[in-house]
Length: 265
Ligand SMILES: [Zn+2]
Image 1 (cartoon, rainbow, N blue to C red):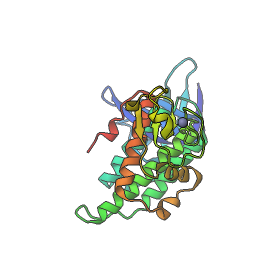
Image 2 (cartoon, rainbow, N blue to C red):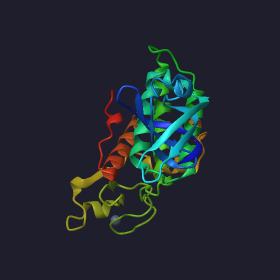
Image 3 (tube, rainbow, N blue to C red):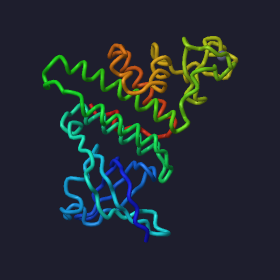
């Protein structure tokens, strides 16, 4: 058995038996890994308070040849992004981030930049001063969280090599489609007005999704910039909600899965 050490975030946790846990991590050196944590809920020294979501931990785990699951030996707290677990709206964003990571990332498909993307987002979110529950400032918090969401999803798609084709019409290859008419989920790209309206063409009108206003510019900006873009970018909450819904539909179609975290209200 080989003992490994890396840093990682929990993206999935499931109780097994009375005291054991099944845990999935996004790690810095091994991509997504899934570990069995024996007696995790009772072993205070090795695990207590170190198996929460949005915590950056250093983990030691055993790899057993021929076994699908690794075995978690020990976890150490490196950075406790505890503000993410204190606020209900930030926590809801966290459930989206972890579900998307779990669905998109393959086991042991290592891409360090995914780990750094998540770490940067957690650092940024941890610094947000959360307004009281009944305050009007909640509206602006939700707009900020939507920007984080669009930033995260757009960059994940780019890092996974599945960022949609927003530059050329998937019907006729026409380029410069900054004001594209719509988007074909089936073909994974934008559709110009002429192709969309061509009754003898490849597209059935009903399968073309309307792109939210400014979506392409917004998403392209997100993948070209660091996180500071979130504070610089002005967009109304309505537009951001539409952009989020479009990305949800794209992810659902691409993965063939329903995203349950988007259904929590
Ligand atoms: Zn076209």
